[in-house]
Length: 72
Image (cartoon, rainbow, N blue to C red; front, side, top):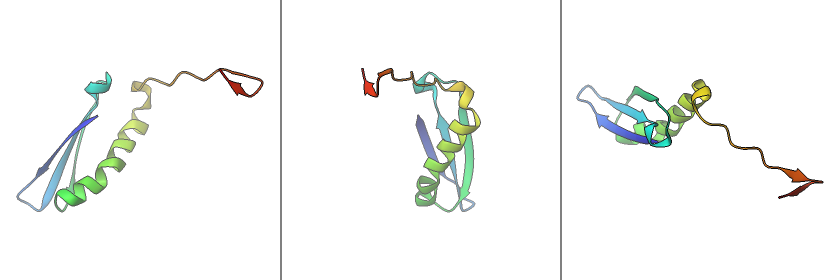
């Protein structure tokens, strides 16, 4: 995931997220009230929301095989 934070003149900050580096065709954009600090604080929440809301776009991890409780 890559992101770009742009502080706007109206007292808000725009967050742009792009998942193409993970092979996922998904981009998201939102604004938050405040500056760069507020945007950086909100960034992980916004990322998680996008991953959850578009979970079908993200590859599922391979299940780990176990034999009698032991990982192989």
